[in-house]
Every structure is written in structure tokens, then in C-alpha cells.
Amino acid sequence: MAGNRGGKAKLLLVEDNELNRDMLSRRLKNSGYEIIIAVDGKEGLEKTTVEKPDLILMDMSLPEIDGWEATRQLKANPETKNIPVIALTAHAMLGDREKALEAGCDEYDTKPIKLPRLLNKIESCVANSRF
Image (tube, rainbow, N blue to C red):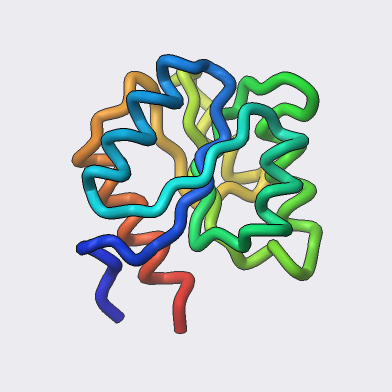
């Protein structure tokens, strides 16, 4: 099935850094996506349950509940386990990608965000999650 270019997908951006959040949400809106914002892992879990986004962009270094634990909880919940999660992290160390995938993330991207690369990952995850 084709992806949602043209903007039908609803994305939840879980990011505690205000500058990163504002810049990325604006760029994603300009790419046609509906954006929901959460500022920590706890709010991310709550908004996922209420909003049922098509995909979650999860910063890994978050207050309250970090992105690793929030993703584990989402993937353990039958209501949210099929929502794709893309880990966003400034940690580009060897093994970090594997750690994100082990936590349940479907994809991984490093900061600073390169929008074309991230958009390709979003399109791929959204297309693969819809049957």
C-alpha cells in the first residue's frame, strides 16, 4: 500500500526539548502530517491511548518516563502495540540502534534530524503498519 504523502497520517512527537519540538513539528506539518505533541514519556503514553496516532516519534532521553521505558510499555499494551515507534536520539553510539529495537522501536534516527531521511522512515513505517 502506498504511504501517506500528502498528509493523512497523525504523528505523535514525544520530545522534551522545546527548540527541537517546535522545529520538527513545524517541518512535519509543512510535509502534510497532523502533529500531536507530548513533552515527556508519561504524557506520550497518555496521548497515545487517547489520540491513537499512526506513528510515534519518540525521543529517548525524556523526563518522567524515558523513551526506552515508554516504548516498552506501548509495545506491551494490546491497544498500542501495533503503532510504529521511531526512536529519535542524539546517542549515535555503537549498539544504540540495537538497544532501541530491543525496547520495541520499529525504526531509529539520530539527531540532528535530517528531514528527508526521517520522512522516508515515517513513510515506510506507516505504509507497513496498515494492511
